[in-house]
Amino acid sequence: MLILAIDTSAVASAALISDDAMESVVESFATEDTRSHAEVLAPGIQKLLAGAGVTGADIDAIVTGVGPGPFTGLRSGIATARTLAFVWNKPLYGLMSLDAIALEVAESTAATPEFLVATDARRKEVYWARYTLDDGQLPELVDGPHVGFASELPDLPVFGAGAGLYSDVLKADEDFATTQPDAASLGQFALAKLTAGQALLDSTPLYLRESDAQVPGPRKRAL
Image (tube, rainbow, N blue to C red; front, side, top):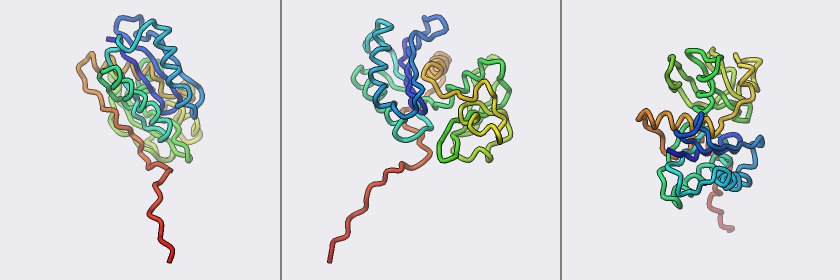
């Protein structure tokens, strides 16, 4: 199975994941900028496919991170994934973006039986979720995702860029203090779940907040 994974919940990233490849990642890219998703994502995917020598016809499924994340950035990735799935006539799945970091934690020596993943939600808040981990198993989401102040999180080890921002009040792991959700890990998690026969989400975004842009109300007629 060849999967195109996309995530724009923080940075813009995409990856080709295959169960026939060494360590499953065929090609991947990720930006460092958290505000240029619309400009870089489509050209990045085009270069990704060209670098791997594949076309849309070779893709078996598309997976998109559904957040949580800022409205505009998250929408860019999901809209791109939906468009490619429609044009290529491929199945489209969603996966919570924080799961990508949770998988990286599970595969590291820093893993604990219970932990949190947190990313920057701006406004002095974080997006976070709680996971449990058994030996040899995928991390299991047990609570979240949520958005809130770092001081309100449970007293557990915290991994991800959100923890790094508020290491003064959180049990932040230094090795993960700048880690953002990444399409390569997202695609690996999706492949593992699909292989195990586990269900994925649809592509409905997890915004957790209302958009800052509001539709104006009807204008009052002058008397």
